[in-house]
Length: 152
Image (cartoon, rainbow, N blue to C red; front, side, top):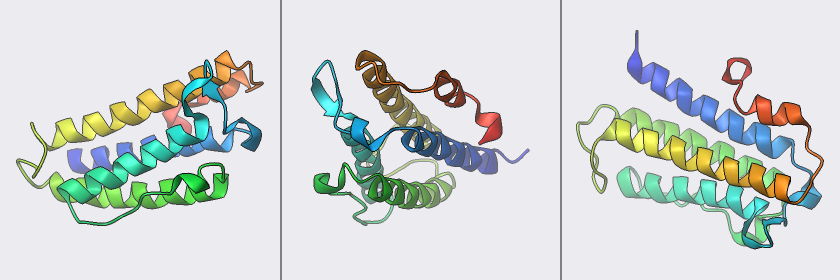
């Protein structure tokens, strides 16, 4: 068993789930907010991308992968940004899994990985809550698809 390879594969699966959700959201829904406040659906995706960029710059290489808010309603730009930041984060994770500690982060690399996955899962949940609260007609299979990592 190759734990490092399994963790990197899990990162890829996490990103595929995020992109799967984005793919099943109508462009018209991107501006919707949970109870009319907080981040819109598009801003949730933007935030996921921009936090990846922040951490890549903090623990690995200084690179700006942030997507400007003016592109938040452009699904294609969101997808491209998420693909690019996921790849850079995978490279970052690969590098830090070889280390016992991470510059600028405690406690250790696997906790960092876990925190990144938890953060993104939280925001996918926020997106689903926003869809539900706004009575948007998303197919129930999409919700189940978020948990079916076997087919990703």
